[in-house]
Image (cartoon, rainbow, N blue to C red; front, side, top):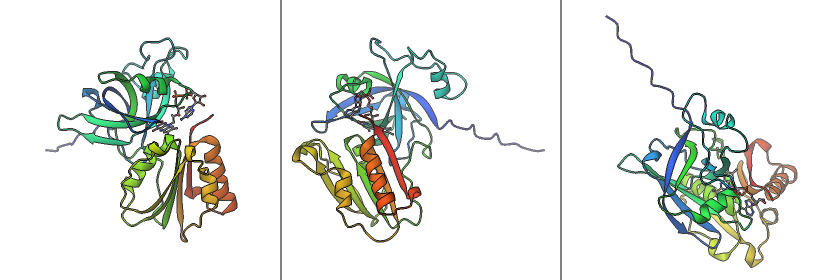
Length: 269
Ligand SMILES: Cc1cc2nc3c(=O)[nH]c(=O)nc-3n(C[C@H](O)[C@H](O)[C@H](O)COP(=O)(O)OP(=O)(O)OC[C@H]3O[C@@H](n4cnc5c(N)ncnc54)[C@H](O)[C@@H]3O)c2cc1C
């Protein structure tokens, strides 16, 4: 007699989750934390660090976002198959923290910059209240391509630079760093009160660059800094021109290997 074991079904790395706003909390003048969860959050499983997800948001004039129905293919293929002028608007956000709960659901914290120019995501966040619903395309397996912070094994020290949109990703990265690893960190925020307490076991030197205090921008601050010896890994995220300028400085002027610099544009002016 032979016995066979059925192979475990492969889990799609990203799935649509119908989430509910659990609570909101102002972290500072520019940043609002929205905790999402509810019964639709079961199976949400991120990889920490700069894990990101996509919000599916209503277009101007729509009361609800038009999201893909369940079906074959990936969620993104099903979203693309919807008419362009009605399908939900997509916006990327970092997972600041996730907490599995005893009932099988997961609480997911997302920190929104409330920028003056509005936009579907910022508008939605400003109005969000407990009980509101939102569909997100999020991770269902921890090792997924929306985790970009991946220091090679031979990394001696890390350099992190984030603006306010990437602050929550940087904070989650700091929590993930191994104890004792040397880290030089520059964080740009609009206001003094946007600074946050950060947890890390790394040997991190964190410098806040507060715009309303007249601080230098990230590239100027890094240019003026004496950086550690050894093999670096760099993670830069935020507004496009700041990201580009710092990457250029590190690769072209300091001679860092381009493959050791992970730079991501989070928004453009
Ligand atoms: C991987 C990834 C992770 C991200 N994580 C976060 C996060 O955790 N928190 C977060 O707040 N943002 C995050 N962002 C950035 C966020 O997706 C953008 O800021 C996005 O443009 C906001 O969408 P919106 O609908 O509010 O505005 P949009 O419709 O995209 O833009 C409307 C107008 O607002 C301007 N604008 C957009 N963002 C800003 C801003 N921050 N400040 C000033 N003006 C702005 C645009 O130039 C445009 O003129 C992330 C982006 C990426 C790619």
